[in-house]
Image (tube, rainbow, N blue to C red; front, top):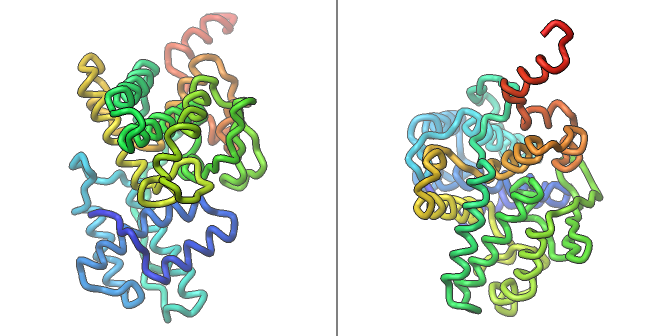
Length: 328
Protein backbone atom coordinates (compact mmCIF):
# COMPACT_ATOMS: atom_id res chain seq x y z
CA UNK A 1 0.00 0.00 0.00
CA UNK A 2 1.38 3.42 -0.88
CA UNK A 3 0.50 6.79 0.59
CA UNK A 4 -1.87 8.93 -1.39
CA UNK A 5 -0.58 12.21 -2.79
CA UNK A 6 -3.75 14.19 -2.00
CA UNK A 7 -5.96 13.91 1.05
CA UNK A 8 -9.74 13.80 1.27
CA UNK A 9 -11.04 17.36 1.93
CA UNK A 10 -12.20 16.34 5.42
CA UNK A 11 -8.75 14.95 6.21
CA UNK A 12 -7.07 18.07 4.88
CA UNK A 13 -9.30 20.22 7.10
CA UNK A 14 -8.26 18.14 10.11
CA UNK A 15 -4.56 18.45 9.26
CA UNK A 16 -4.91 22.20 8.64
CA UNK A 17 -6.51 22.51 12.07
CA UNK A 18 -3.53 20.77 13.68
CA UNK A 19 -1.09 22.98 11.80
CA UNK A 20 -2.97 26.16 12.76
CA UNK A 21 -2.86 24.99 16.39
CA UNK A 22 0.94 24.94 16.28
CA UNK A 23 1.21 21.19 15.75
CA UNK A 24 2.81 21.03 12.32
CA UNK A 25 4.93 17.99 13.12
CA UNK A 26 1.87 16.16 14.46
CA UNK A 27 -0.03 17.06 11.30
CA UNK A 28 2.79 15.65 9.18
CA UNK A 29 2.93 12.32 11.02
CA UNK A 30 -0.88 12.02 11.22
CA UNK A 31 -1.18 12.76 7.50
CA UNK A 32 1.31 9.98 6.76
CA UNK A 33 -0.70 7.35 8.67
CA UNK A 34 -4.10 8.60 7.51
CA UNK A 35 -2.91 8.25 3.92
CA UNK A 36 -2.62 4.49 4.54
CA UNK A 37 -6.28 4.44 5.59
CA UNK A 38 -7.31 6.53 2.58
CA UNK A 39 -5.43 4.22 0.20
CA UNK A 40 -7.09 1.15 1.74
CA UNK A 41 -10.54 2.78 1.53
CA UNK A 42 -9.89 3.47 -2.16
CA UNK A 43 -9.21 -0.22 -2.80
CA UNK A 44 -12.54 -1.03 -1.10
CA UNK A 45 -14.46 1.64 -3.02
CA UNK A 46 -15.56 3.36 0.21
CA UNK A 47 -15.66 7.11 0.84
CA UNK A 48 -14.01 8.23 4.05
CA UNK A 49 -17.20 9.93 5.29
CA UNK A 50 -19.28 6.82 4.59
CA UNK A 51 -17.14 4.43 6.63
CA UNK A 52 -18.91 2.37 9.29
CA UNK A 53 -17.68 0.64 12.43
CA UNK A 54 -17.44 -2.60 10.44
CA UNK A 55 -15.27 -0.86 7.85
CA UNK A 56 -12.87 0.45 10.48
CA UNK A 57 -12.83 -3.00 12.07
CA UNK A 58 -11.90 -4.53 8.73
CA UNK A 59 -9.09 -1.99 8.40
CA UNK A 60 -7.84 -2.96 11.85
CA UNK A 61 -7.71 -6.60 10.73
CA UNK A 62 -5.90 -5.56 7.55
CA UNK A 63 -3.26 -3.64 9.51
CA UNK A 64 -2.74 -6.53 11.90
CA UNK A 65 -2.76 -9.44 9.46
CA UNK A 66 -2.16 -8.27 5.89
CA UNK A 67 -0.12 -5.05 5.85
CA UNK A 68 3.56 -5.57 5.16
CA UNK A 69 6.43 -3.10 5.15
CA UNK A 70 8.92 -2.73 2.34
CA UNK A 71 11.08 -5.50 3.80
CA UNK A 72 8.13 -7.88 3.97
CA UNK A 73 7.76 -7.81 7.76
CA UNK A 74 4.59 -7.09 9.70
CA UNK A 75 4.05 -3.84 11.60
CA UNK A 76 5.12 -3.71 15.21
CA UNK A 77 2.28 -3.66 17.74
CA UNK A 78 3.22 -0.10 18.71
CA UNK A 79 2.89 1.03 15.08
CA UNK A 80 -0.43 -0.77 14.68
CA UNK A 81 -1.67 1.04 17.78
CA UNK A 82 -0.51 4.41 16.43
CA UNK A 83 -2.17 3.86 13.03
CA UNK A 84 -5.54 3.09 14.61
CA UNK A 85 -5.38 5.83 17.24
CA UNK A 86 -4.77 8.37 14.46
CA UNK A 87 -7.86 7.14 12.57
CA UNK A 88 -9.91 7.28 15.79
CA UNK A 89 -8.69 10.82 16.49
CA UNK A 90 -9.59 11.91 12.95
CA UNK A 91 -13.16 10.65 13.21
CA UNK A 92 -13.59 12.06 16.73
CA UNK A 93 -12.64 15.50 15.37
CA UNK A 94 -15.03 15.13 12.41
CA UNK A 95 -17.82 14.01 14.73
CA UNK A 96 -17.38 16.99 17.05
CA UNK A 97 -17.81 19.27 14.05
CA UNK A 98 -20.86 17.37 12.77
CA UNK A 99 -19.10 16.36 9.57
CA UNK A 100 -20.08 12.74 10.34
CA UNK A 101 -23.14 11.72 12.35
CA UNK A 102 -21.22 9.22 14.47
CA UNK A 103 -17.63 8.19 15.05
CA UNK A 104 -17.16 4.81 13.32
CA UNK A 105 -13.81 4.35 15.08
CA UNK A 106 -15.08 5.08 18.60
CA UNK A 107 -15.09 1.42 19.59
CA UNK A 108 -11.69 0.62 18.11
CA UNK A 109 -9.45 -0.94 20.75
CA UNK A 110 -5.89 -1.16 19.42
CA UNK A 111 -3.71 -3.93 20.79
CA UNK A 112 -1.52 -2.41 23.49
CA UNK A 113 2.16 -3.30 23.07
CA UNK A 114 3.84 -4.76 26.16
CA UNK A 115 5.17 -2.07 28.46
CA UNK A 116 8.93 -1.67 28.62
CA UNK A 117 11.44 0.52 30.39
CA UNK A 118 13.49 0.80 27.21
CA UNK A 119 12.65 2.25 23.78
CA UNK A 120 12.30 -0.91 21.68
CA UNK A 121 13.96 0.36 18.53
CA UNK A 122 16.94 -1.00 16.66
CA UNK A 123 19.57 1.70 16.37
CA UNK A 124 22.94 2.19 14.76
CA UNK A 125 26.24 1.61 16.49
CA UNK A 126 28.84 4.34 16.06
CA UNK A 127 30.58 2.32 13.34
CA UNK A 128 27.28 1.78 11.52
CA UNK A 129 26.38 5.47 11.74
CA UNK A 130 29.80 6.43 10.34
CA UNK A 131 29.34 3.90 7.52
CA UNK A 132 25.86 5.28 6.74
CA UNK A 133 27.20 8.83 6.42
CA UNK A 134 30.15 7.53 4.40
CA UNK A 135 27.85 5.73 1.99
CA UNK A 136 25.72 8.84 1.50
CA UNK A 137 28.91 10.84 0.85
CA UNK A 138 29.98 8.28 -1.76
CA UNK A 139 26.62 8.62 -3.51
CA UNK A 140 27.19 12.37 -3.71
CA UNK A 141 30.65 11.84 -5.19
CA UNK A 142 29.32 9.36 -7.75
CA UNK A 143 26.59 11.68 -9.05
CA UNK A 144 27.22 14.16 -11.86
CA UNK A 145 28.09 17.48 -10.18
CA UNK A 146 25.39 20.16 -10.23
CA UNK A 147 22.77 17.73 -11.55
CA UNK A 148 19.41 17.20 -9.84
CA UNK A 149 20.55 13.70 -8.84
CA UNK A 150 23.61 15.23 -7.20
CA UNK A 151 21.50 17.87 -5.43
CA UNK A 152 19.13 15.23 -4.03
CA UNK A 153 22.09 13.15 -2.86
CA UNK A 154 23.49 16.20 -1.05
CA UNK A 155 20.07 16.83 0.52
CA UNK A 156 19.80 13.23 1.71
CA UNK A 157 23.30 13.34 3.19
CA UNK A 158 22.53 16.62 4.96
CA UNK A 159 19.14 15.52 6.32
CA UNK A 160 20.33 12.20 7.74
CA UNK A 161 23.51 13.79 9.11
CA UNK A 162 21.48 16.51 10.83
CA UNK A 163 19.20 13.85 12.34
CA UNK A 164 22.19 11.92 13.67
CA UNK A 165 23.88 15.07 14.95
CA UNK A 166 20.89 16.61 16.74
CA UNK A 167 18.50 13.75 17.56
CA UNK A 168 15.54 15.60 16.06
CA UNK A 169 12.27 13.78 15.58
CA UNK A 170 11.42 13.14 11.93
CA UNK A 171 8.55 15.63 12.02
CA UNK A 172 10.71 18.26 13.67
CA UNK A 173 13.51 17.70 11.18
CA UNK A 174 11.28 18.04 8.12
CA UNK A 175 9.51 21.11 9.52
CA UNK A 176 12.78 23.04 9.83
CA UNK A 177 13.09 26.23 7.78
CA UNK A 178 16.26 27.71 6.35
CA UNK A 179 15.76 30.59 8.80
CA UNK A 180 16.04 28.09 11.67
CA UNK A 181 19.66 27.31 10.80
CA UNK A 182 22.42 29.52 12.18
CA UNK A 183 25.52 28.35 10.34
CA UNK A 184 27.92 30.75 12.04
CA UNK A 185 26.93 29.65 15.55
CA UNK A 186 26.25 26.01 14.55
CA UNK A 187 22.77 26.18 16.08
CA UNK A 188 19.30 24.96 15.16
CA UNK A 189 16.20 26.86 16.27
CA UNK A 190 13.24 24.72 17.28
CA UNK A 191 10.14 26.89 16.98
CA UNK A 192 7.74 24.26 18.34
CA UNK A 193 8.13 20.59 19.11
CA UNK A 194 6.16 18.47 21.58
CA UNK A 195 4.97 21.44 23.67
CA UNK A 196 8.45 22.98 23.89
CA UNK A 197 8.78 26.35 22.20
CA UNK A 198 11.50 28.79 21.30
CA UNK A 199 14.45 26.46 21.89
CA UNK A 200 17.89 26.85 20.35
CA UNK A 201 19.99 23.68 20.20
CA UNK A 202 23.67 23.22 19.28
CA UNK A 203 24.72 21.13 16.31
CA UNK A 204 27.96 19.30 15.53
CA UNK A 205 30.28 21.34 13.33
CA UNK A 206 30.66 18.58 10.72
CA UNK A 207 26.90 18.28 10.22
CA UNK A 208 26.41 22.04 10.09
CA UNK A 209 29.12 22.32 7.42
CA UNK A 210 27.22 19.78 5.30
CA UNK A 211 23.95 21.68 5.77
CA UNK A 212 25.61 24.99 4.87
CA UNK A 213 27.03 23.47 1.66
CA UNK A 214 23.62 21.99 0.84
CA UNK A 215 21.78 25.29 1.36
CA UNK A 216 24.18 27.22 -0.84
CA UNK A 217 24.76 24.77 -3.69
CA UNK A 218 22.16 21.96 -3.81
CA UNK A 219 18.88 23.34 -2.44
CA UNK A 220 18.45 25.92 -5.28
CA UNK A 221 18.76 23.13 -7.85
CA UNK A 222 16.01 21.13 -6.14
CA UNK A 223 13.64 24.11 -5.95
CA UNK A 224 14.39 25.12 -9.56
CA UNK A 225 13.04 28.64 -9.10
CA UNK A 226 10.18 27.75 -6.73
CA UNK A 227 9.76 29.55 -3.42
CA UNK A 228 9.92 27.62 -0.15
CA UNK A 229 10.93 28.33 3.45
CA UNK A 230 11.49 24.63 4.15
CA UNK A 231 15.05 23.49 4.70
CA UNK A 232 14.44 20.17 2.95
CA UNK A 233 12.15 20.45 -0.12
CA UNK A 234 11.70 17.83 -2.81
CA UNK A 235 11.48 18.19 -6.57
CA UNK A 236 7.69 17.68 -6.38
CA UNK A 237 6.79 19.66 -3.25
CA UNK A 238 8.08 22.61 -1.28
CA UNK A 239 8.60 20.44 1.82
CA UNK A 240 9.93 16.89 1.98
CA UNK A 241 7.23 14.49 3.18
CA UNK A 242 7.58 11.87 5.89
CA UNK A 243 7.11 9.04 3.39
CA UNK A 244 9.89 10.46 1.21
CA UNK A 245 12.30 10.58 4.14
CA UNK A 246 11.39 6.98 5.06
CA UNK A 247 12.20 5.94 1.48
CA UNK A 248 15.50 7.85 1.49
CA UNK A 249 16.58 6.25 4.76
CA UNK A 250 15.59 2.74 3.64
CA UNK A 251 17.60 3.13 0.44
CA UNK A 252 20.58 4.58 2.33
CA UNK A 253 20.63 1.71 4.83
CA UNK A 254 20.34 -0.86 2.02
CA UNK A 255 23.27 0.76 0.18
CA UNK A 256 25.31 0.84 3.39
CA UNK A 257 24.74 -2.89 3.95
CA UNK A 258 25.74 -3.65 0.36
CA UNK A 259 28.91 -1.56 0.50
CA UNK A 260 29.95 -2.65 3.99
CA UNK A 261 29.66 -6.45 4.17
CA UNK A 262 31.66 -6.44 7.41
CA UNK A 263 28.73 -4.78 9.20
CA UNK A 264 26.96 -8.11 9.58
CA UNK A 265 24.65 -6.99 12.42
CA UNK A 266 23.19 -4.10 10.40
CA UNK A 267 21.48 -6.42 7.92
CA UNK A 268 19.32 -7.88 10.71
CA UNK A 269 18.25 -4.52 12.13
CA UNK A 270 14.99 -2.71 11.37
CA UNK A 271 16.18 0.87 11.05
CA UNK A 272 13.43 3.51 11.04
CA UNK A 273 13.50 7.30 11.13
CA UNK A 274 13.14 7.11 14.92
CA UNK A 275 16.18 4.83 15.03
CA UNK A 276 18.31 7.87 14.15
CA UNK A 277 17.01 9.61 17.28
CA UNK A 278 17.74 6.56 19.42
CA UNK A 279 21.21 6.39 17.86
CA UNK A 280 21.88 9.99 18.86
CA UNK A 281 20.83 9.35 22.45
CA UNK A 282 22.78 6.09 22.72
CA UNK A 283 26.01 7.51 21.29
CA UNK A 284 25.80 10.63 23.46
CA UNK A 285 25.07 8.71 26.67
CA UNK A 286 27.74 6.06 26.07
CA UNK A 287 30.29 8.84 25.56
CA UNK A 288 29.55 10.42 28.95
CA UNK A 289 26.70 12.88 28.29
CA UNK A 290 24.71 13.36 31.49
CA UNK A 291 21.04 12.49 31.44
CA UNK A 292 20.10 16.07 32.40
CA UNK A 293 21.87 17.50 29.34
CA UNK A 294 20.55 14.75 27.10
CA UNK A 295 17.03 15.49 28.32
CA UNK A 296 17.39 19.08 27.11
CA UNK A 297 18.97 18.11 23.80
CA UNK A 298 16.15 15.69 23.01
CA UNK A 299 13.42 18.06 24.20
CA UNK A 300 11.88 15.44 26.48
CA UNK A 301 9.25 16.45 29.01
CA UNK A 302 10.62 14.21 31.76
CA UNK A 303 13.87 12.55 32.76
CA UNK A 304 12.06 9.23 32.81
CA UNK A 305 11.38 9.57 29.10
CA UNK A 306 15.07 10.20 28.44
CA UNK A 307 16.01 7.21 30.60
CA UNK A 308 14.07 4.96 28.20
CA UNK A 309 16.57 5.91 25.51
CA UNK A 310 19.62 5.34 27.71
CA UNK A 311 19.56 1.85 29.27
CA UNK A 312 22.69 1.15 31.29
CA UNK A 313 24.50 -2.05 30.18
CA UNK A 314 24.86 -4.80 32.79
CA UNK A 315 28.66 -4.58 32.68
CA UNK A 316 28.51 -0.88 33.56
CA UNK A 317 26.24 -1.68 36.50
CA UNK A 318 28.63 -4.41 37.63
CA UNK A 319 31.61 -2.01 37.50
CA UNK A 320 29.61 0.59 39.46
CA UNK A 321 28.76 -1.99 42.11
CA UNK A 322 32.36 -3.15 42.46
CA UNK A 323 33.65 0.41 42.59
CA UNK A 324 31.22 1.86 45.11
CA UNK A 325 29.67 -0.85 47.28
CA UNK A 326 31.60 -1.10 50.58
CA UNK A 327 31.26 -4.91 50.73
CA UNK A 328 31.62 -5.66 47.02
